[in-house]
Image 1 (cartoon, rainbow, N blue to C red):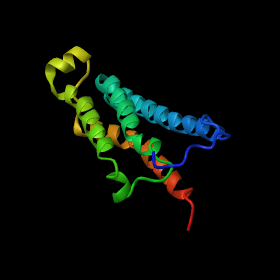
Image 2 (cartoon, helix red, strand yellow):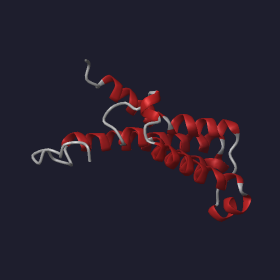
Image 3 (cartoon, helix red, strand yellow):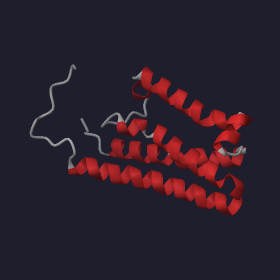
Length: 143
């Protein structure tokens, strides 16, 4: 409400916006497929769980790219919106808890993941957020 209204001549769904959708969608897809293929080779019983966790966690971590045109990977940017931080914490908890609560795991047909599998999931799901923040940092206006 404190910002000036958007220029009515400026398109909401611009070409740049569609390029960002394609970039981030492609990164999330590539990381999810990479985890799935890795899991098929080294942990086939966990392949579905690992790929789902990667997809969901990548989307949660993408919040930093989606909420601002500027980089948010600094202490002021990361903690600027406590509601967003709370939403990320709750979302990650809701994502991870069923893996460790046997009745929920059975209901959702997911398997327990080991430390190595979680490392792969976290590393590849965070790649979209890292690439996005690096691009925003590289493209920020210099003063």
